[in-house]
Structure formats: structure tokens, C-alpha cells
Length: 179
Ligand SMILES: Cc1cc2nc3c(=O)[nH]c(=O)nc-3n(C[C@H](O)[C@H](O)[C@H](O)COP(=O)(O)O)c2cc1C
Image (cartoon, rainbow, N blue to C red; front, side, top):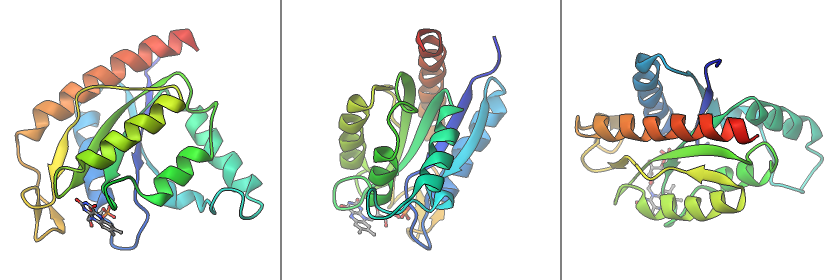
């Protein structure tokens, strides 16, 4: 069986965001395992307007084509007002079939590990028929980032990142058969 393609989706798009640091860290660990193809998927690159506000055929096609080529996802999730970012919600709304019957893991951060945003995302993923795995690395803005800006993850998260990736790969492979 060919290697699975897993997209590491950066959930924030604001200038000065921390998500690229977290995404690169996850990718580095994932690449080291050598058992799947991992790529960073940056929502900001797709310049999606708010859904329905203007003609976005080109952007929507590019976004859906990218998602269609992926077998599973790792969402890098940050907590904004106890939920996910507007840009992640908008990007989720911009596709349907391309999400369906795939697996996802969540890596979140915030003052309490981004837990509230992660739980909101799980509810949305259910509607999109994305199977979200249980193991959830939750990073603290206080202890995993120096001055809240420079990412210095505690070693203890490695076990959870690997556990989450194990589950994402197992379910992504199983759901590929279903698709
Ligand atoms: C609009 C906004 C709302 C926020 N609300 C929360 C919150 O409810 N809980 C929390 O833990 N952090 C909150 N934060 C802090 C963010 O989690 C933190 O700034 C994080 O770095 C944002 O991710 P990003 O840097 O990738 O954009 C908020 C930040 C912003 C910009």
C-alpha cells in the first residue's frame, strides 16, 4: 500500500501567529517516523474570503483539491474566545466531500492547552464525517512558549504526539479502504 498523505493544517492566519512554529515541530517529529507523507497546509495561502461573500471559485477549487489529495489531518488549533479561529471555521465550511471519511488528530494550545477550542472542533468534525482520534497533545501558552512567543515544548508532549500520530495513521488507513 502506498504511503498515506497527512496534512498538518495551521488553524490561525493572523500576522505574528504562533501556529507555524507548532506545525513545524509536529512535522519534524512526524517526518522522523518515516511512515507517511506529511505536509504543512497553511490556510492563509488559499486566501479564502468569508464563505458566500464574494466569488471564490478559484480559491475554493484550490482548497478542495488540496484536501482531496490528503488521507488524514493534524489540526494545529489555537484558542480564540474559547473556540477555534474564524479562519479555521471558514476553511472547514469551504469543503464537504473532501473532508468526509478521513481521520484527524488535534494539537492545541492556549492558556489551558486550547482544550475548549479542541472540544468545539470535535463537534464540527463530527458533522463533516471526520474521525477525530482520542490522543490530544495540549500545549500551554505559559509553560511551552517562552514569553508566550518562542515555542519551547516540554519533552513530555513527545509521547502524546507520537500516540496521536499512531492513531491518525491507523484510522486514515482504515478509512481509505472505506472511501
Ligand atoms: C481574539 C483572541 C482571543 C483569544 N482568546 C483566548 C481564549 O479564550 N483562551 C485562551 O487560552 N487564549 C486566548 N487567546 C490567546 C491565544 O490562544 C494566543 O494568542 C495564541 O498564540 C493564538 O494563536 P496564534 O498565535 O497561532 O494566532 C486569544 C487570542 C486572540 C487573538
